[in-house]
Amino acid sequence: MTTPEPVSINRLNPDQFKHWPCDQDHCLTCALCSSTCPVSGIDGFDPRKIIRMISLGLQTELVESRWPWICTMCGKCEHVCPMSIHIPDIMRGIRSLRDRNQVPGILHKGLEAALKSGNNLGLPQEDFVFILEEVAEEIAQEPGFEGFSVSVDKEGANILTTIHNKLVNTHTEDLKHWWKIFYAAGEDWTIPAENWEGTNWGMFTGDDAAMKVMAGRIAENMARLKAKNLLWPE
Image (cartoon, one colour):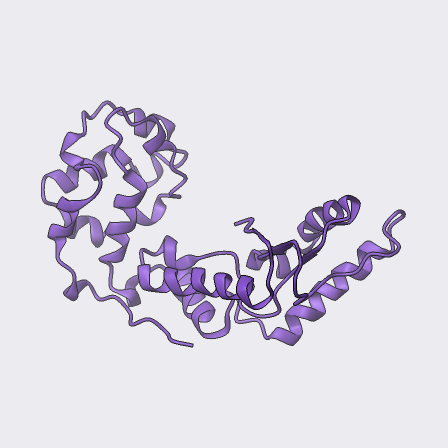
């Protein structure tokens, strides 16, 4: 397993902002992005201000600020932008310029754990499978689900599903909803025992190399288990 080389701000050229899909200089400052943004106003955050700062050449100030990390990258701003400016992509570009050691702690540490262990929690495989089986046993005790069991690493399943790390940490109850639907529908499904993480923090941190590794592992699981379809809830 190859771990991508960390990105350093000193190796990146701020001029990359000039070559994104739609030039930020097209911004009309209409504020539609700001009005739809769910986090607009937090610590003064405003997507319109960020686009304007880039046009004014203030990339360094943005890279060093907290603003790009407040953004949820939900895409609402891009959806309403009359100039079709790809604001979430711009946010990722700004984040990519941050020295990896300066990326906010939970994201940086989670990504490091995922690259090393296959999941953002660093959860060992035996513990992961134990949690899945424990949740499955709870479902099997409910009326109508007496024959329920969890399928791990089954070859040839119709659906392979990834798992969000919180579902085997603090929200195990949320696993049951998907699984009950599968059972009621008579679906043929499975979960990979390794590299099961569905949350790609490489994407959220602007680390394209890490994002490629994480996505590639899911593709490898699809090929390894000869699964026909992928359910990627995250």
